[in-house]
Length: 271
Image (spheres, rainbow, N blue to C red):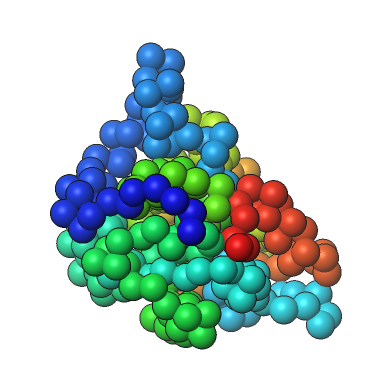
């Protein structure tokens, strides 16, 4: 057992009502006077998250598995698995496009302390099936460690609690990260070796990718989409492009091992 007193459902529900203010919290991270206070939840030094794109046409090295295999690896390695009974973001913001009761997944010893009324404690196979369901309905998963989630759940050791958020484009707190300081924005790290490029001959400048990018990293210049340096690699732009003009590729055959190594250095999901 990880130890510590987790939040009760009542306490959890009160805490998650603050989700609606996340945009303000990100803006405040730009102000020196609020930086120390913000570290309690938006602590860039103790946050490292990475999107795993589910774009079906992603180009991979010969014989390499798709990015979701990284999440599957951690689910199989984890000593404990919990699926929240609801998504704090979707439920608090009244999501109209995705099920607000489709909850986040948490892994590791610290997850043992999650109140059963807040999240159901499940088997490895159930956690894997939940991941498959997320992919099937179009939710894009982001994983890593986030101190704010440990505070939300009332567990002490955030280094032994892995977050797997199954994110919609409309409600997830990551769609407000562009408002934060550079340190805060950099806590969301692109998958190793991933590239997103625009085919200028196919692009019509329709701006559907601009609307799809929750990080505000795409603009149309001279009728062609241009992707910014702070692209986080979620792949939503490619999924939205009607002309198949956006190419997502990974050329490094060791990208899975590199990503697993980086995340494992930040959070331990074993016993």
